[in-house]
Amino acid sequence: MKQKLLMLAALSTFALGCSAVGDLAVLDDSLGLSPVSVFDNPAPKAFEYRDLDPKVAGILPRSWEDAPPQIPHRAEKYMPVNAKMNKCLECHDEPGKIGKKEKGKPTPMSETHYVKSDKGELGISNKRYVCTLCHAPQVDVAPIMANTF
Ligand code: HEC
Ligand code: HEC
Image (cartoon, rainbow, N blue to C red; front, side):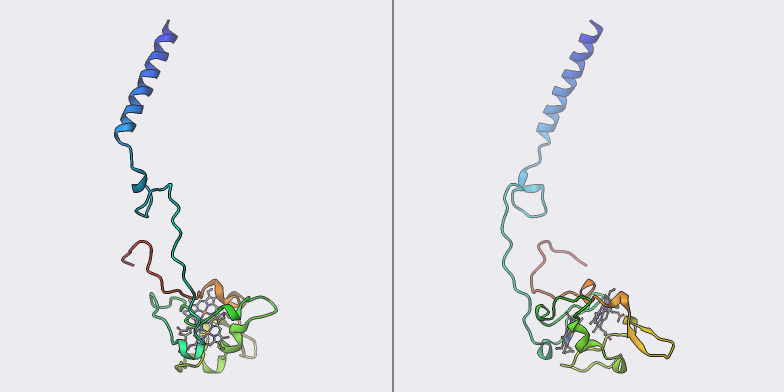
């Protein structure tokens, strides 16, 4: 008998709980960040990466001081970056010109990208070899959600 009573109590609590959840139901179009139903699967607008030649691409604004600058020019042609091939270095590895920027000419990588040998020569640091870990090509697309960053 005691057990039966307990069961009844548990059942009625469950039923109460259900009706409370029903009252607080969240609509499926207010669950996600996007203002559509979470059951919809809207296709994002197609976009294309900049296909500008490095000579005319200029540079892009940096989000904060010391942020890795975004790649302003086409990058697809210079991929992949791997142990055998690094096209980025062919243009940006100019240890003799560090800090000297010239419009239309490849910006020399900064000193942070190098290690000094015993003889004082600068060589690319292994930590900076894979450029695309930190530098990304950009697409002109508005953010899906506005932000104040
Ligand atoms: C054919 C030469 C060339 C190659 C290859 C190249 N770049 Fe560039 N890069 C440039 C030039 C030229 C600029 C633009 C400089 C300007 O107009 O101020 C530039 C600009 C940049 C900038 C912006 C620098 C800044 O001060 O904002 C980054 C970052 C960059 N390149 C990264 C890369 C990466 C990563 C790769 C490889 C995937 C690469 N580049 C391959 C020539 C090249
Ligand atoms: C671990 C992250 C990282 C990697 C990998 C990396 N960079 Fe950078 N890069 C940065 C940051 C952060 C800055 C801005 C601060 C600075 O100059 O150190 C920068 C700055 C630059 C600049 C602008 C220099 C200036 O004087 O304004 C160029 C050009 C550049 N990187 C090219 C490259 C290339 C080419 C490679 C690959 C060989 C590469 N980076 C690899 C993080 C990285």
